[in-house]
Image (cartoon, rainbow, N blue to C red; front, side):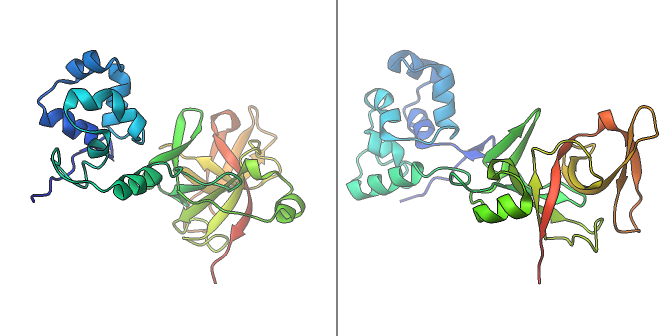
Length: 252
């Protein structure tokens, strides 16, 4: 059997629903008319924006001439309109499709981009939205003891975010590859200290902030602890703060 290569659209592999429709030579508009499902919903299902389940596929199956099980497993058995599919395969596939993306409830999310001690990263499927930004997050989060969050970090777990740093601009305070814990509820640069901020490219970077209170309007000095990196200054209103750095998870 010749295995079909999976096409990618928008960073996601196209699903079996797309291949089943293409195999029948049916347009998306025609399948929308026959199934009664909206074109927008069909597009999301075909492009992998929604994780397929058998109940998603039932409205399309009879019109395409495949069973929901065959469409669901199309990537594993391409073109298997007459092939035998074990029910256990379908159950395993549905279980995998139902696995939640992103960290489990109660876990502190970690961005799936290396926070810049200067630079961006590679996007993931799940994101953490904040204003006009959407930062990718890892599939697994962090679990911190409640007493540690309350008594040492003095905040709430829901406000926390873990960042994986990259670069040497904050050395020796923070070394490349070390993670920091950020309180995303702390958006004001007071007291002076370490903060996660957005750079001009929208990436998250960790810097030391020092407020120049005598200036009008108020300005903030953005400092790199590594003397080989220049500091800069910006009006407070132009600074986008993600949160205050509470702790560094050091490497040994």
